[in-house]
Length: 52
Length: 376
Image (cartoon, rainbow over all chains, first blue to last red; front, side):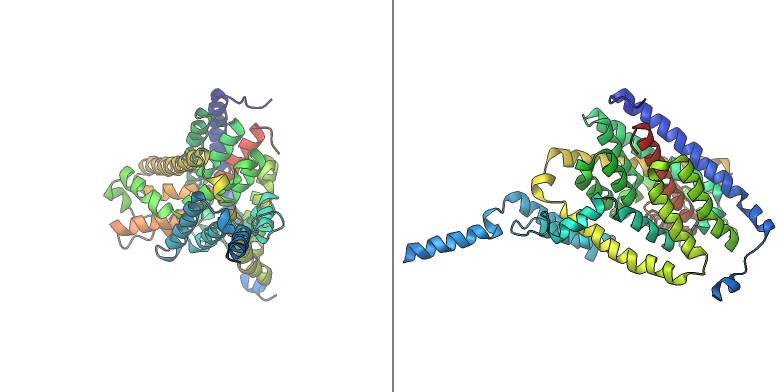
C-alpha cells in the first residue's frame, strides 16, 4: 500500500514522516547517551594508532 | 559582390550562437553573474556559487555544445543524474566532519528532526498547488538543507525537477546567512540569544570509532532507501577517526571532495538553461523551497526554546536553527547571530551538534518518504 496522490495523502505522509523522524532520531540520541559506557569497556591508545 | 559578402556574413552569423540568443538567455546570464557576484563580493559560499554561476552563464550561450549530449558539462550532469556524485560527496563530508559535538551532547540531537518541519509545510504546499505527491516530496526535501540528499531524493521521486530543486537547494544553502537571522531574531529575545551554554564533555577515541559503525548499522537496518549516502558518510568518518589511514582520509576530504565539488557545481549550473528554467513551475519551486527553509529555521528555534524552558535556561535557542542541516553553514549562522548580542559567546561547537543531527534528520525524512511512496 502506498500513499494516495491527494492532499489528504500529502498530510498523512507528512504526519507519519515527521513523527517517525522524531522517534528514530530520538532513538539515536538514546544510543548516544549510552556511549560514555563504552569507555568502561576499554580505551584506545591514540599514540599507538598514529604510530602506523 | 556586396550581396555575396552579406550572404556569407549572414551564413556565418547563423552558425554562431547569436542567431539563437533570446531574452531568456540574457536573463539567465545575468542570474549567473549575480551568483558569482554573491560569491566574490558577499563571500556567500564561493565554493558552490562560483561554479554554479559560471556554468549557468556558459549554459545560456546558445552556440556552446558543452551542455548538450556528448558535451563536457553533460557528462558532469550524468554524474549527478546517475547518483554517482551524491554518495562521493557524503564520503568526503564524513572524512571532513568531527561528530564529537553530536556525541557529546545527545539531548540536542532531537533538534535535527524538529528543524525539518519546513519539509512538510513545503510538501503540503506543493500538493495544494497541483504537483503530484512524488514531485511534492522532492520539493519538500529542499527544506532539509542538504544538497546531495535533495538530489538523491529528487532523482528517485521526480527526476525531471532536478534542475530547479538542486538550484533552489544549493542557492538557499549559500544564502542561509541572509535567510535565517531575521527569523532567529524574531523568535528569540536578546536575553535568550545571550545564553552561554556549558562546555561539552570530552569524547574518547573509542566512542568516535564506534559512532560511524553504529550509525551505519542503524541506517541500513531502518532506512535502506538512503543507506548509500549515510553508509558512505560513515565510511569517510571511520577513515578519519581511526587515525590509522590518514592518507586515505585526507585524500577523500581534500582531493576527492574538491574534484567532486567542481563536477557538482558545474553540473547544477549547466541545468539552468533558460528554455527549461524560466517557467512558472521554477518560480513555484523556488518559493516553496524558501518556505521550507524558513519553516525549518522557525521550527528548530521554537523547539530549542521549549528545550531551554525545560532545562531551566541552559540552552541557547539559536542552536535550534542549526538543526536544519547544511553543515557547517547553519551552525556558523547560529554562532554569528549569538556573537552580535554577546561577543564572548562562542556557540559554534554547541550548534554543531544539532547541525550534524540535521544531516541525519534529512536522511531519515527522505528515507521514510521514499519508503512510504514505494520507491527504493
